[in-house]
Amino acid sequence: MAPLIGRRLRKGAATTAVAAAAMAALTASQAPGFAHSDQGDRNREQRAGEAPAPGDTPIDGGSSYHTDLPPLVTPDKPGSSTDLPGLPGGGSTKAEAGIPASVLDAYKKAEAALRKSNPGCNLPWQLLAAIGKVESGQARGGNVDADGTTVSPILGPVLNGDGFALIKDTDGGAYDGDSTHDRAVGPMQFIPSTWANWGRDGNGDGEKDPNNVYDAALAAGNYLCADGRDLSVKADLDRAILGYNHSQEYLNTVLSWFEYYKRGTHEVPDGTGVLPSGDGSGGSGSGDKGKDSGKGGGKGKDTGKDPENAHTLPKPDDEPDNSTPTPPAGGNGGTPGTPGTGTPTPKPPTTPPSTPSGTSKLTTVGAKELSATAGTDFAQSPRVKAVDAAGKPVAGARVRYEILGETDSRFLGLVKSATMLTGSDGTAAAPKLVAGEKTGTFTVRATAVGREAAPVEFAATVKARPVPQADALARLGDKELTAQTGASFADALTVTATSKGKATADVPVTATMITSAKDPELNDKGPYFLDDKGKPVRTLTALKTNALGQLTLPKILTDDHAGTFLLRLTAKGGAVLDIELTVTEAEAPAS
Image (tube, rainbow, N blue to C red; front, top):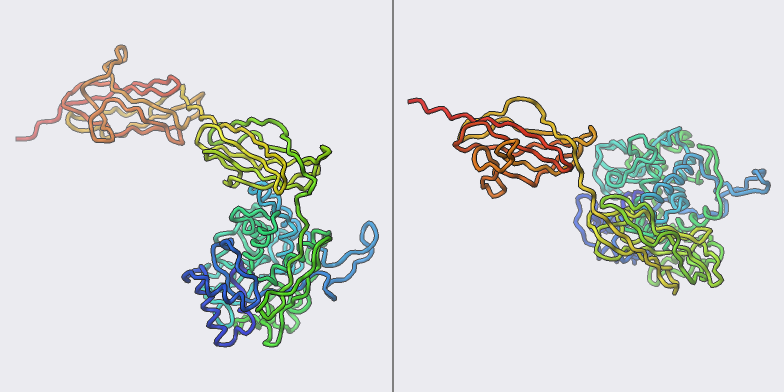
């Protein structure tokens, strides 16, 4: 599955009527080359028994349209897994709970990275595992090399409009090997145009490769966390999954695997993970295991439909798998489907509220007054503790942090609010607070979500940056500066400001034409500058060194006075440099 784009058209897509509807739906998307309109698309969703479009914009800004889903197999379905006896500690476990080592490591590293870059998202690695299971069977059972790159390509069907969405090539075949049309690529099934926007380097090798499970997992995590989503909130979790593939069946299936992995997993060696029976999840690859024995690993490439390896198109009398996902402990099972759809649609598993009912008070932990210099990080983040009526810590409580007041300071990720979960000790820290350029004081408020506990406020102050200073000024080059009267100096004048021998940026410098070093009065004749209105001036104050600590002065012009003149440069910090300017009489025109 490429998010929103990249699946075969839903049941009956081979017919002319449905193909026409499919193209209308494509036109409704914001995929490259199509205009935007979503009303007809939403009507089709209702008729097809899919989940209605969420009230807000999908993650990548496009509108949904119907494409074929990956095989939707839920955990614990009869025949989907076997017991594995003799594991450490005794007893047995389900083979489906085994996740290949590199794939599991990629999911956990993506979670850790998002915890730093976007902590308010609360991305659990089990969600990536659930999507990776549905999309590619955990990278084809962990068929990856030592760097986490798939041994053979995992490709979706050719998106050529013949029974599929029509998406012309956007990557020159760089990722999918097709320079005519696009195909979904890799263990998390991104199409190339989506990868161009969301690709990430998850393994630190300097490359963004959708075929690498570390890169793909981090990209999927960022995709799910986009638009300020907090995945500890059920509504945001559902919207994120539907943004990946807008289907109630898909949502239910991913949620069932999510709950399954939350109940426990174990690591298995790469290449030994469970592969779904039948066609195998997640696209194709001519070298995939089990595809050499006449099942047609390459046959689909000849037809453009990849029938054996791609997500198969249901026959007209097929019905989607609407079996009720295994609910979490304390959850509810499925319920009858949406009226008028013709197909029962199970209700997603009900997740118990993440905010314990016992939270009755928030208390501050550490300082209530925070400060930082403009453009830097605050040394401390606001931190609170949730306790119950008896004063005992409450774990798993949701605490919302908000920035109030006129300020350009933000939490990490450039957001003004974030919801965090308390740990086992009842504490929850806000994401790192980054000071903007606006100085002054603002407030950070912490609120227990869904509780009547009084909010806690922190006072945060942003101080002005200290003005950089220099203890020395030096001219670049030693060429004598000369010009004729009524002209200008041809050579540019550049100086470097240093502090303790190091070039210093943003040092304020004043340039003044003076009468002499001993009597540094402002000279009223000789060389001059032009101000921003084009008027002659002999003092400039709005000068600063660049990132290299250098300053090149504006053009210096001359009046009708000849002689030797003195330009004095004075830097903040006390550094002074005098430069001689020689002006000669202009040559008389030849008679």
